[in-house]
Image (cartoon, rainbow, N blue to C red; front, side, top):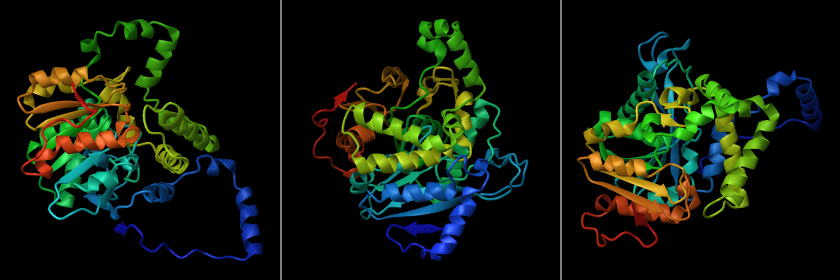
Length: 396
């Protein structure tokens, strides 16, 4: 099913004031547990629509069916009590004819709406398709039953490949942010024939704990605080569980974080009041919904966000031209990309964007777009007029 921006909404339901009052009174008598987490799938989709109302480019949202299977199936995302079809929530933005296709993959604890500040600019040069990874955002949230790093990687890589088949995409430019960068890179390693160019924005997963020689982490684990946090990590205690545990106070916590991160503590262009409100609402509903893809955390990373199967080990097998993009203030270390580049046998560039942190595409959208257009210059134009890096950006 697909919904086009601006399409007519369902007709509002009307009721008399007396019946409305009676309904409100009845709801107030419901057991509080039924309203402890004020969210639902409908809330996610509605919040997404409100956030994307800030985007001027027409778009279509669809739930792309990636198949179904019986309980106990060998396919990772069908190992549950349900044999219902799985869907990937997908937004496709109107573009000029013959524009190269750009597929955007979000990071951990995020979803495709995080790119709301980028869709208009990118749609001028690309056919932009943004997805919610399986188990996140408005996509299906099947039971997460993976028990190893290999199974967890397959959950994301194979479900993405089924999505590609369903969308009948041949080759495309693939962008992944943070954990989405890890997934995108692993996908490109397995299916290089479908990826024209790989763009990794503040990607996670390039270094392991042993390679980082992190003495401070070893010492921290020896403290009681470190031991507790390490135990929580290995128990798969996710940030989303905190949001759910706070119940009706969860939205306020998320709002405080969002306004602080992209307001007072922003490294670049702060969100407007409307952007902050809509993003906070959207983020809350995507975090508070049923746990699914979020449970990948302990299988992909060890405590301290070090990859259990780091990408640096596969750098020599890279078959796809790659561009790394980092904000100057990104907590992800670009030195991992520099080391990977030394081992790669394909073209590789590392671009740093000023006034940007880990969410550089929100902090400095203009600088991020310049980096994107430079990285994809040969796909946008057969004969790029300017080969020099745009002003303000730097190579690493």
